[in-house]
Image (cartoon, rainbow, N blue to C red; front, side):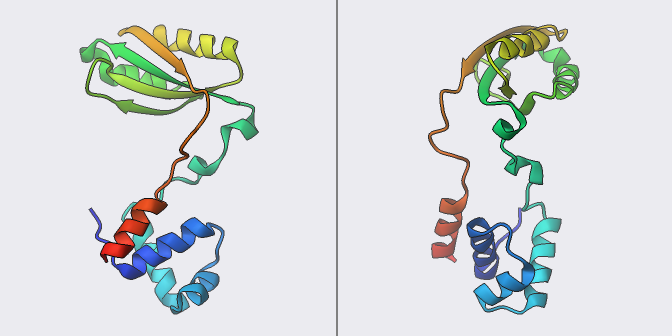
Length: 157
């Protein structure tokens, strides 16, 4: 785990506020040299701080207005192969191994209810998948965010 100092946190907060900022703009905004910002960004990137850019693309813009969460119950000895098969389904945008009654929680995007039905059927067709339970997301009430954690870290730094 990487430890962030006050400068790292300020840099991350500035990027949250304006992700398209240039290194020069970030340096001016934070009162740092361009080289310092460049080096910090490189180190943050090398330590895995930044996620892939595709996480910022809205699936609605690609024609997938609906999001659903599918709990997948599997035969444990086939889990690794099931994950490989699920990764081949383009509409699966995220999956987590879970503790509790379900083995996997899969986030899918779809065009409509018929598309969701098809995707669920594709998941069920994977050898070793016993059953699924599907919930359609009615709306995102708290979007993905890390700024509150950065604010807390800033106060503690």
